[in-house]
Image (cartoon, rainbow, N blue to C red; front, side):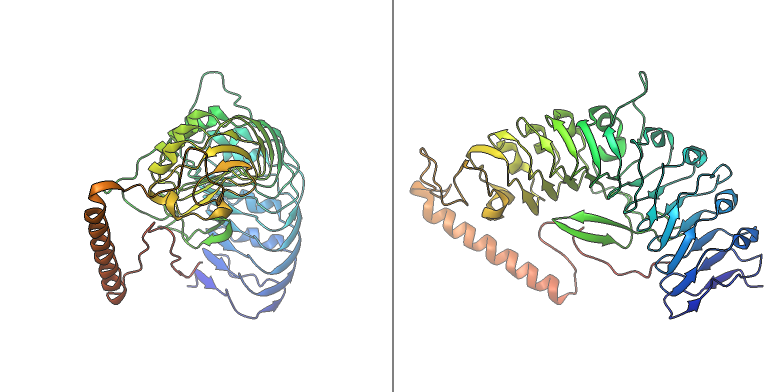
Length: 407
């Protein structure tokens, strides 16, 4: 009996074929199918995974898809669907909903509140016009929320007077390129428990959907768009860039100690960079560019020993640039268009700083000899790892892309 039908990544054209009613897995992704999804697809009463991404499909997404109680994955991203399905009343098994890259309009369907198994929700790159769907915070298993490049507007408010448990499992939140206003959502930062966990050596790295589907998501990382072909449960990112947020960056954001990527660029944020950012010991990418931040760069940023990307340009920062650890590796571009900044790596020297190296005096030769020995040791280790086919990087094990076949 045929229960698994995989037609992905071919050159198939025409209308979507309808498989037997007992099929549980049906994928037609990465083809050239055209037309609409026929409503007869909903007669597949055992269907668990339906993937029709990256075709030339159009029309509306059938409402009946949200009423298949066995459906756990609905992935129709990268087509030309319009409208917005509203009825997910019976989608009690739905764990992944990806409608990214269509031309959907309207509001986020409130019936998604019934999807208590939902882990991945990707509505990015559409024309959705709505306020922030705060009620999604009640979904107990939601790990990935992508709303970027839509028309969301207004402030992000915390509507519960007593509970601070919303989005407690959320590990990736991308609200970039919308029209959100007001202050940054401090209350939500306090409830994002999954972004506060310290992923030490004993942490177990698993993938979302390992048991049922190979989930992926596209995020901005280190200034570039990057597709995560698999989503580690310990991978965390917060992107609120390209909106109209105002006010200060709250100190409480430093409590998100497991964050790897943090992007608050292209807003109207003011005040100083909070020193609590130095607590985010696993941070790999920090982008605060194109705001109105002022004051000095806190020296605590030198504690971020995994930091591989830093952009503080186009602000009103002033004073000496801190030295030490990863901060020694960044070029002028990380600090451009801050007329008050001085010190290395800028050519503008500070009045009380002659830019001399940190190690001086009678122990200079000893320190130099130690430094040379240390670098020789590191280089030998790097060559050994290369010859041993290790895929490592000196700043982070998350920067490599591992190619997996994505269902």
